Amino acid sequence: MNYLLGYDIGSSSVKVALLNADTGKCLASATSPRQEMEILAVQAGWAEQRPERWWQEAINATQELKASYGFDATQVAGIGITYQMHGLVLMDKAGKVLRPAIIWCDSRAVDYGNAAFEALGEEYCLQNFLNSPGNFTASKLKWVHDNEPEVYAQIHKIQLPGDYIAFQMTGELQTTVSGLSEGVFWNFREQAVAQELLDYYGLDHDLLPTLVDTFAEQGRLTPEAAQELGLAPGTPVSYRAGDQPNNAFSLNVLQPGEIAATAGTSGVVYGISDQPVVDSRSRVNAFVHVNSQPDQPRNGMLMCMNGTGILNSWLRKIVGELPYDEMNRLAAQAPVGAEELLFLPFGNGAERILENEPTTAELLGLSLTRHDRTHVLRAAQEGIVYALNYGIDIMRVAGVQVHTVRAGNANMFLSPVFREAFVNTANVTLELYNTDAAQGAARGAGVGVGLYASPADAFVGLERILTLAPTPDLQTQYQEAYARWHQALTQQILSTSTISHHVEQHAN
Image (tube, rainbow, N blue to C red; front, side):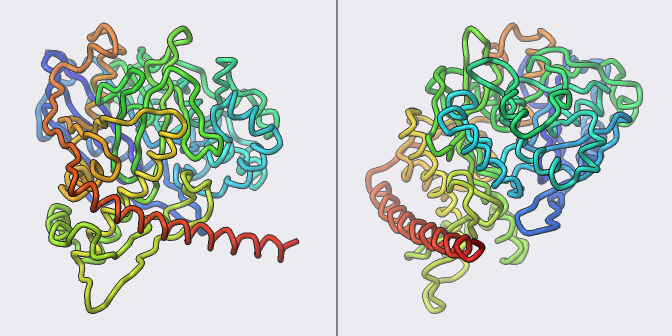
């Protein structure tokens, strides 16, 4: 039997899944730690994690998987890695991490990206990078260059979170074109590294790792890594991809017009195009998809909402550490629209769909005699859906067709309230599948070692377990509730913009 292992390096936890390569069935999985990993916030708007913790949790999860399912490690044909996107890991020549990783929801580099967008020219950036440099990895590296020059001087190579895990496994410092694109290190028009942005930022081109294919043997487990993980030395690492391209891959979303969604720590809708689709205000972003080739480009148009699972997790602490399924049951007891209680689910770093403006979470319309925890829980789930729909509307204007959306049967899509709100607000059909990110990474590893002839052949065993379509009565109710939410968001944006304008005037 051939096994495949997939690792999902998240900001909340690390998950590993074991697949039977012949049947495509997930045999077992393990997650570590049980409670969410800490995100360090040294200053407001900052978000950091220690990469060494990711590696330790990968070890812990692998050991737990082996203890629960006694597989023969010599039969693991390949290892795949998926990871939280946009993080910045800095390595010195000895292979040591120089500082905590600056992760995806960190906002410190917004001003650097905005300045680059203006200086290089908005049209130039959108035509060549398909994005504003924004708050992405290249801008975070510029922040280190300017604010921590003693750290910058010691950098040998930069890495994305998945690159770091692959390095711990293989000793190889590498990344992918898809990975470079997620950091806005890639020029789509030239099909090459974005030298213009690196030069503008004054960054050393040699800091970027060697490029490898997404699906390919990218190195083999070193004896040291194999001993720590309890796996066999020489096992190939044969796939790596950011969490959202990988989520789409795990759902067999590979061709133009296909759409994937996820609602974990962040909420994302990700659509495939063979054209350079852009949003002129860079509120939704384009990245190189996992199956893109120079002669057959595939780009993923991504809208991301930061405050998804983190809001649900925060509420869980407030309502007494209830299980999530109990929170979902309570949310269903409140009516559609939560009796006009509104949740603006922001406050977890700069939101790209709001043009990286500073935002906060807000609960609006609370009546102490009318609303209880069921209304708050429902308003939160609906608010997340409405924020996703706000981004979907932007994608549609940019030219992405959104009709049928595929998602894994996991995270917030486990909630009947969330699913119902999603299909009726966005006017889409939702298909849920028996997969997750770690399983997608394992399938990718199978492509990389040649067990599957192509990415499209990797989906034996993938099953659709639920299809949900809008219903006219509910659609009317949700559209009315969304209109109220949209009006409240508009007021928040106007208020924030006014405050920012006054602060700017005062500073000048």
